[in-house]
Image 1: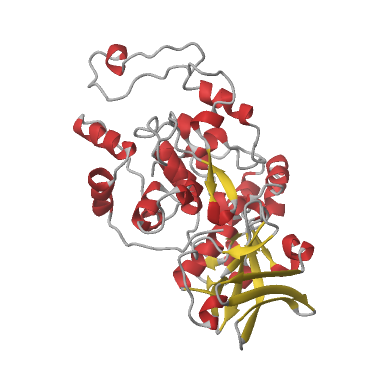
Image 2: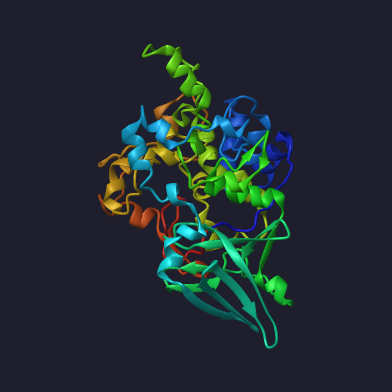
Length: 416
């Protein structure tokens, strides 16, 4: 699932000004303090800015050089069998599927919904799955091609018309076991039946959808070719095309490669800010959300975990203990038990710790408006249930964990 995509061609200087001077959040304030003290501060960047500055390094959603650069998970598994085997069972590995293999549609071969004057239906036919909308006297339909999302929270569909991709006006939500308006379309009020069927995805938006939900759909040499995409987030979606790496390993014949010459990206080598931006290429960086501006306020933005994380008071100018991969191993299933994250919390807030000012800890350092971590006075387990509360996103009929780590006070409004 993804909201409507907006792109902005910001220069680094404009982005830094926006981040430091205009953004109403703690992260920007602390970064400004870092600049005033003379300490180098790494600024979160929009995904387009990250990709624009890269030449030979990989970044999610970046175009690959050529289709043949991709080798596929089976080849990766010859050396990385354990990680590959566990990763292919994760929701990310099933972030997209061709409609012919979409389990949700096989399990629900006939679904209907109504919105305003329009009636919607998805039904199985000998040719595939027909998606239609009708009003008092008309009916139009399209054959669904792609299903995006494994339906843990929801699943959205894509169809093609006149060589262009459209996102279905209706999505499947497991909480209601049926169809409702696609997230990001809730403000749309269609007047015509054609517009009611779905929303046109211009080329940049369509490519963004496939870049985040599939692997290898876009290459510099071949252009946008979704028919060649591998469904889901595979090894190469995050580590980059593996062709050159495989050739190198074959040439080495078991010898150890020199550092920095592996011809493949290990995201763990990234700085904290870059690491969160890396995941944010699909889950939305702080700068991506800031650039979007319209339609991202309120609980719906809890879906943008990197943005929420970097708005945390404890994020500051970046902390390796607070990156996405510090708590989540992308090769493993997501942990849903709250207590499973306690040790991560104790890495910063050891049990029994008492508040101590930063100035006392480092007398010669400029004082910051923060203090050393203290233990929670309320509980010593299941920390995330209080400090990363569940937030209801009504349009998705689901709750999301809010990654803006904070002390939540009763009755306070949702902090954007």
